[in-house]
Image 1 (cartoon, rainbow, N blue to C red):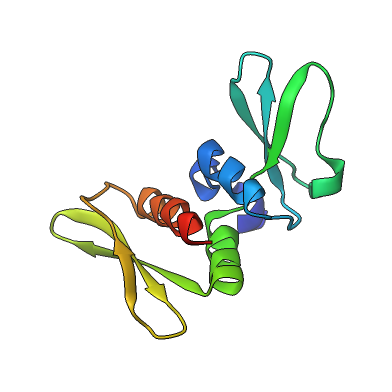
Image 2: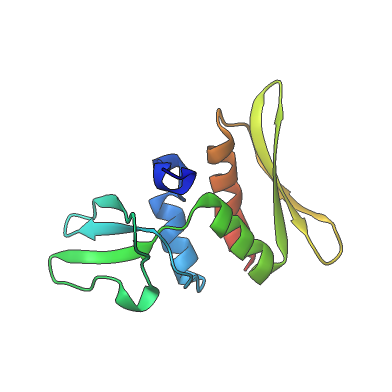
Length: 134
């Protein structure tokens, strides 16, 4: 089985970031999506052999909505391509953190206040903050 089929929840952006990405125009095909019920509770649904397309997202009455859930890498690449913002994740003795760089002039745009315990959390946080600049 390929590594792609072994993805776990931390490989995908969080529900909050998924909604922000869609609001900013993310329309790429994804293997996963978040489905929300009438209470607002979200569940990550990962497809093994198919992809979700934006135009096919659920719009049924029993659901509040469905949001594309790209992998962290796909979202990072989209931000880099669309917004010309490079997200760097690094580690020091305190933990993981991110920095955002403008790819046009290579200037530092923003960096994380504090640290997280995982690379994935730092990258997700970096993606979330980068979306405020798009």
